[in-house]
Image 1: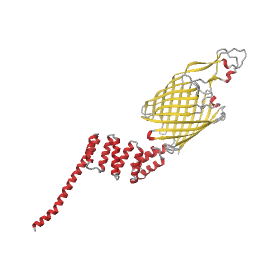
Image 2: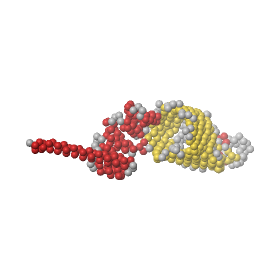
Image 3: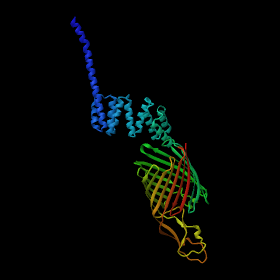
Image 4: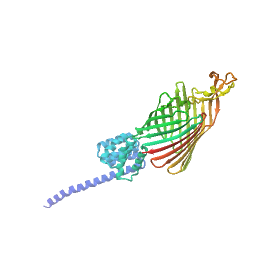
Length: 513
C-alpha cells in the first residue's frame, strides 16, 4: 500500500520537477540571449561594428526568427557600409517573416537614406495598408512623391493624414508649407523704362504666369511689349517648361516663342533648351542652345537679327564663404561671323550680421568677333561742309555690336541689407579697373572738295585703335514682401560701356495663388 502511494507521488512530481528544470533553463537562455543582444547593441553605439556583427551572427544561428535580432543585425550591416549585404539580408528576412512590420520599416528607412526611392516606396506602400496613420510612413511617402515629381496634392494628402491626429507635428507642417510655397502658381506683372545714349528709349509692360503641377510639369507663359520712341512697338510671347529629376539632381528647360515687329517681314521664332546638372557642394553645370531675338542696336529694331547661342556655365551658388560663375558663350550671327565671350566672376563674404552682409570679388570678360560690323552713319555720307583729307567720319555698329579683342577686369562688390523682416535692399556694383578694346574708326582719304558733295564709300577706310576705358555696372534692388503671397520689387540699373551709357528702371508685382 505504502509503495503504491510512493509510486504515485513520484509519477506526479517527476514531470513537475522536469517542467521546472526546463522553464528555468529556458529563462536562463532567454536572459543570456537578451544580454548578448544588449552587449552587441552597446558595441554598435561605441563604433565597434565587426565585434557586434560576430555576436549577432552567433545568436542568429539559434534565434533566426527573432524580430529584434533581425533589426539589430540589419542595422549593424548598414553601419558597416556594406550596402549590398544589408539589402540582401533584409530581403531574405522579410521573405521569411512577412509579418515583421518593424523590419520592413527599418529596410524602407535604409532605402530612403540610400535614395533608392522606388524600392522604398514599394515597402512604404505595403506598410501604409497596415499602418495608415503612422506619421513616419506618411511623411516619407509625401517626401518621395514630391521629390520624384509626383502630383503635389498626393504629398499634401499624406501630410494632412499626419496633421489630423498630430496637428502640431513640426516635420509635417514644415514640409507642407514648403510644398505650398514652392509650387504655388505665380503671376508676375512688370513695367519699366529704358534709355541709352545711342539713343534708344522704350517703355515696357509684361506679365509672366507660372503654373506648377509637378517637378516634370512646370509650364510658364510670358508676354511682353516694348513701346519705342520713333520706332514700331515690339511684342514677344513665349512658353517654357522645366523638367526636374530629383534623384539625379538634373533639370531640363525647354522654351519656344515668337517676337513680332511690324517693321519685319515675318515674325521671328525663338527657342532654347538648357540642361543643368548639380555637382554637389553647391556647384552646378549647365549647357544651353538657343535661337534669340537680338534687340540691342537701333538697326536691329528695323532689321530682324536672330543669332544662335551656344552656352556653357559652371556655377557655385552662394554658400557660407563664396559664390561664382564661369560662362562661355558663342553667338553665331551668320556662318562667317561669330561672337565669342568668356566671363568669370566670384564674390567672397567679407562681413555678415543678421541685418547686413558685404561681399567683394572680381569680374572679368574676354570677347571677340570674327568680323566687325561698323559703318558710317547715313548722314555722314552727305556732309554739310566738305570733308578734309584724313578726317574722322562718325560711325555706328550695325546691325549688331561686334567687339574686337575686348578685355575687362573689374572689382565686383555686393551689399545686402535686411531692413525689416519683409523688406530687403541690395546694391551690386562692378567697376572696370582695366578695360581695353580694338575700337573701329572710319577715316576719309579722298579728294578735297570746295563745296559739299556726297562721299564716295570707296574713299572711307576702317582703322582700329586700341582704346582704354572704365566701364561701370551698378544695380540697386528693393523688395517688399507684403505677405507670404504678395511682393513688390523695384530695380534700377546703370551701365557705362564702350558702346553706350544706359539707365533702366523696372517695377515688378508678384502674386502667388
